[in-house]
Image (cartoon, rainbow, N blue to C red):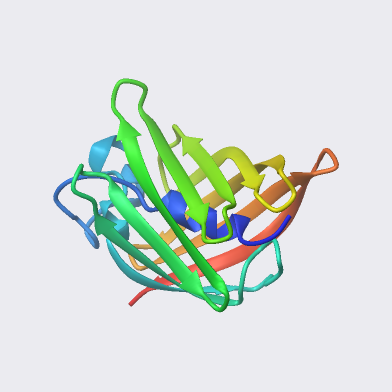
Length: 171
């Protein structure tokens, strides 16, 4: 298990479509409909209080922009770390999806149907070097329109283990 499950999760929080409403969205509207994560558009400075091989570096920059198909494009980078992903909304199932990849070849695909100031995303994480997969989940809490928190966990030996504790502040 190498690298940044937690920052995949950051990417998972960066989610979809059209006209940005970055600072005016109420916490109750997070994740609601195709504009439920527009407040994430922009650049964020992130600090991880549990830096590790699995949890990622102590500091990263998260950049979220609109992709040509209406989804959000996510790029996370830090010391010896680079990840990219897209997050999109399926209106039929009201599900947010976030396929992501690290420069190491590790991949994840988390999803969530939750809304509100606290949401949980979950899905598989595949580690390319070992060829192993594991379950991951990220709990995102919107503190304010310019601050959010990500508690990242991985299922190891049947138990959930915290692998990242990240706070991001919009630049």
